[in-house]
Length: 207
Image (cartoon, rainbow, N blue to C red; front, side, top):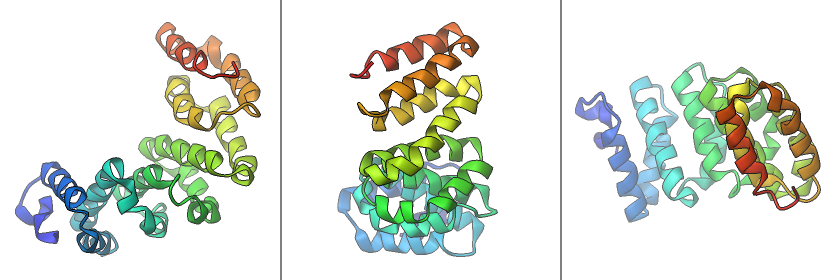
């Protein structure tokens, strides 16, 4: 599998990595995926960058195929290699509903990555948090306040997208406070952003 990575065939684009991800999904090649995870955990930066791309592309298509590797992704969340760091958060976002226990047990690492990571890492961490909240009421009690605090303080241009990501965990018990936070942010939003938020809130059954 490794010989098909973009860096191994002299390519600078991501298409070979995407094609490899599709191939691994279509064939359910668990051994091949294990090899790619091993490459992600290696020391060659070009290889690790390509491997994490392959893995989160698999996650977007067939998350069950990488669900058992949650701890491998968590290990790289605070990596100095920014590509590996945010790529690992992207991968976790695809599997947080399939392997929530391992992720919740390491929530302090996920939260640290959220607090210090790139824009992409932050975006995907909201999905991770929301899936954890949806998975378990105990997790929700501890993680939902992180989401609320984020929505109260994030940049106005992020409110709509991040509230959409968070909406998957909204239920009759937390809808009111969620909607209250969004209501407070409305004066800061543009017309386009407001329209997006209104569209979201209109779909919340408790609204």
